[in-house]
Image (tube, rainbow, N blue to C red; front, side, top):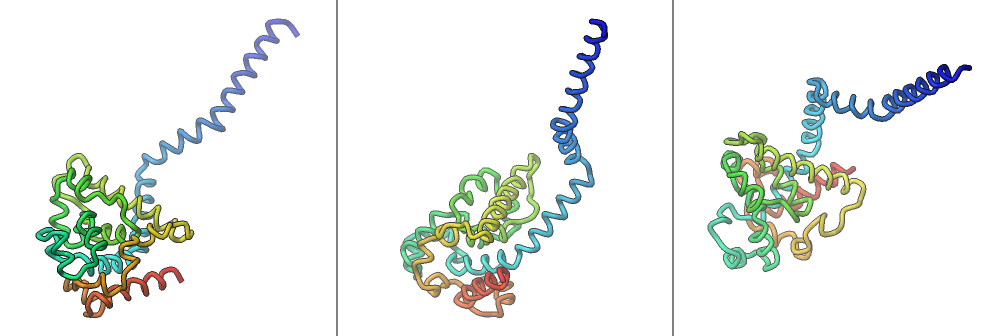
Length: 228
C-alpha cells in the first residue's frame, strides 16, 4: 500500500470514528432535546402531569381540610397571641403564624391568582413545609394566575408541584424523615388540639358535614386508603 493510500485510509478511519461517537453519544442527546420541543411530546407531558395531579388529589384535598382545622379563616387579622388565646398550642400557633404559606389554605383561589409574584416567592414561600402542609398549599393554589406575563406565578406553582412530587415519591419509598411527614409541633399534640376551626362549607360537604376533628381522622383514613 502506498503512503498516500495509507494516509487516506487513516483519515477515513478517523472520520468514521467521529461519526460513530456522534451517533452513539451526542446525537441521542440532541435528538432527545429536539423531541422535547415537539407538540406531541408537550401534549404527553401535559397529560402525564394531569394524571399525576388527579392521582394526588384525594390526599391533597384531605390535607387541605386537615390544615384548615388549625388555620382560622381570619388568620391574617390576628397574631400569634390571638391564635394561642383561641386554643392552639403555643408551638402550633407559632408554626401557623410564622409559616405564612399555610395562610393560603384560607385565601380564595381568585385572590391568590392576583397575588404579586414577589409575595408568593417570599411571604408565602413553601420552604420548610412538611408533606401534609405542602399538599394543603398545593390544593389551595389556583391552576391559572392573573397578571402573569413573565410566567413567574406559574413557575411558583410548578416548583410547588415538583417539590410535592419529590416528597410524595420519597413518602412512597419510606424515605421521608419524621419532620417531613409531620412537623414536630403538630405531631406532639392530640389531634383535637389542631382541629379547632371548621373547614369551609364546601369542604364540610366533602367530609360529611362534620367539624375539624372528623377532618383530622378523614385525612389519615384517606392516606391509608391511597397507600393500600
